[in-house]
Image 1: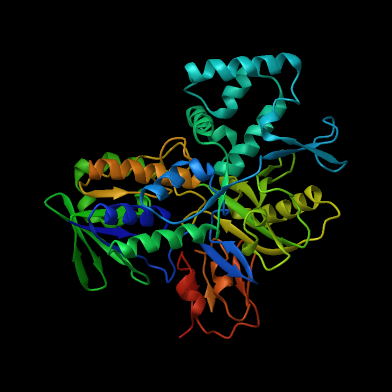
Image 2: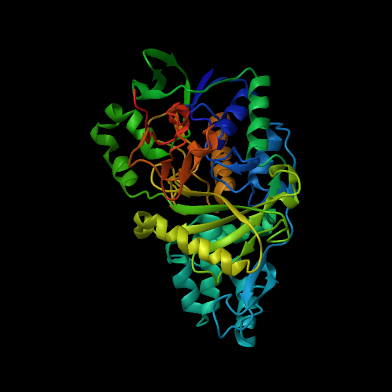
Length: 425
Length: 53
């Protein structure tokens, strides 16, 4: 059996590793000269920046991605991060960091609440596990339960950091699936070697299973014969396959087989694709001699104007920066209407960092933004349409087809695992 | 080298530029240090770089 994978991002390489392990003859076609997509390292001034993700796995060494890596025997070490913290204003009457701040642990997020609201949280933690809230957004659900603005800020900061969305665009079902996954798999972790540590390990697996990866190789068409996916076209060559996995998201995949999909039976699928929206974000990479965050977990910053959270991965893997330096990365959500004002959004982010780290010395290494065709997520979390397409033997994986409750790469791994279950069982 | 509207500002080109000639802030911009070597063209994920022939 022969499988062709279009795109050597994380979803494509995970699929290639699993299929080659199961005995498929696997060819991976990648348009760029590098593999890893938005999950690899970019060497910049001696720092290992990343092409997208923040060198962090949302559920660390026991999450869905770590499990899948273990299943395919990828040799990568993932270290559990320190506990996440939240930066709070010194006085809640002044909702910014201008007059000082204190950090509290993520798990103590309820401490700023009134006694009554804390009791309510305790009850909700039990009751929502039995019967999950449905049919609204995270923001709307919080407002039906509490009058406190802190919880909305906290939710916006968490959703901004982990999903690059605001709490009013995240379905409440998705949040509760994420919370369940936090119980199941625990908190964040950092792969040694950063994102590329994972990509290198997967490539080694694919090579040892006889699979091949072709870079600078762009697929121009997916061939459909008798209603089934049958191969791809690269340049003037045709490659036949029994199975095709696209790592490009549903919309770009549909463009590669637009002729076949032009038949009327597929119109509802194409209509659904029109409603899929990517998510946008800005990442600011800082270099510092002294630690800025001070631990390897996430620092959430709900009282900054734009920055949602920051991590400092060099506490786990010092090799991600030159000797004696730290690599600190902030992430901020960008609202769809602000994608056209990226420079202003970046300025707000840079000002936030000055307030979050007053008196600290750091250098801004690189500012990276992601939207539209190279976004944070090709499909905003909670809206993913699954891995199947209307064409048999053609599947979509990656950040345009994440599994439910899977933050970023954990969602990619859940989507790949679900796809492999369908194909291999 | 010209950068078109496809550019999202991901900075991938800047990391592969051997001259350190690309500045990024929402969009990439070539500085006077650009020698038109064209390497960045291959690494752009959104086909935003047009290299002059």
